[in-house]
Length: 462
Image 1 (tube, rainbow, N blue to C red):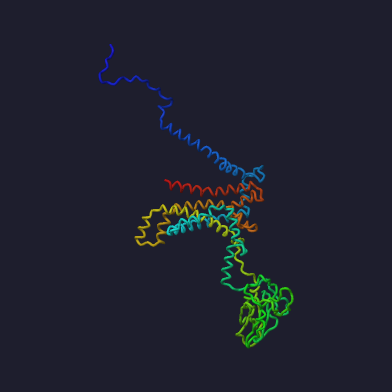
Image 2: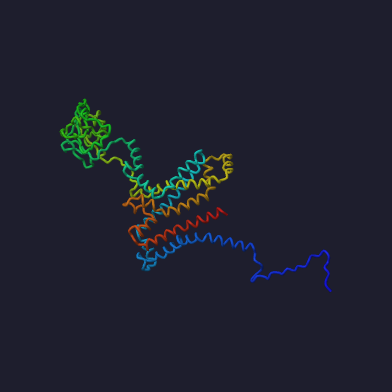
């Protein structure tokens, strides 16, 4: 007898249940979607991973392996390249200079960038200022090196810095030097051991002593130099010893020795001393026509002397590209390039700072220096750390500026690790084994800074 369905009851389920999957239950749609997303991400990342392996991973591994072979690359030498690296004086100097770069450049850039970022917030044209400061970043290190090689030229006619230094020096020191000047004969003047010239005969007040010199080219004469003829014809007054210092040479020929001729010019700006018993009793400076005079001399016999300073080389500026200043000079060029980078990054962090803290400090009576020192700097500490570590990594790899700016004779004095690596490998050393050891050493120095920077980024994102 068949069962009678109950009115209102649900119909029996006649559908078949799918057999269970081997190793588990039914597939999870979320897991399938996650796998699909990972597969798509892998497909898109694969070209980048291949490039990363070919351009970064493989060269690193090859360089590490190459560092254990000799210059030819055929004989395994173990750690000899690393031992030779630290025994080489050039490498030790490069390590020392790299340490100077790491200590000085990042600290200066971070400090200057911080100050400029804070100051530009208080001016209306701050954006334009940031743009101008950031513009050197668009210039390659090669072009910047060429620019600063000219800026640091020792010749004031070419180097901008020395042109400014000479101009400032001459504004305070009006003395005129004639390094090539000398007497035509030794009849009147005798040369001293210190380079000065003193009259052989002594004179008393009321007389004139004219001192003729040669060896001065017309271009060395100042523009205000006048003819010496008029000065030589003026008689000395009672109690006065006077004379003229002039160029004893007439252009085109003619003229007489030790006599002032009509076309001969005076030597302005020369120091003249009156000497008695070996002591300088009075000093005068020649005028535009070369004339000088001593008016306060007592009776007696005096020698007239031209001190050695008159014949010294004129001030030519600072030797920026010399052994003593070459590293600071290159660091200065580096600061010019990277100051905008530091300022913009710190300025971005400054714009994200909460303003209510600074306003509350101002209301409590804090001045701007206290706000900067106790609020701005602590709140910007993470940004300052990232900027500093980034610059440390960058200065360890500096090469272009040192190679371009440093002249050949002082290149070793400015040497850094990256440049030493290139010189040993390709710049004449042709020892890729030792160069690879230097590259590995440089990598080991950079890796801790990179790890520190990555950790800072992760902490800032968490």
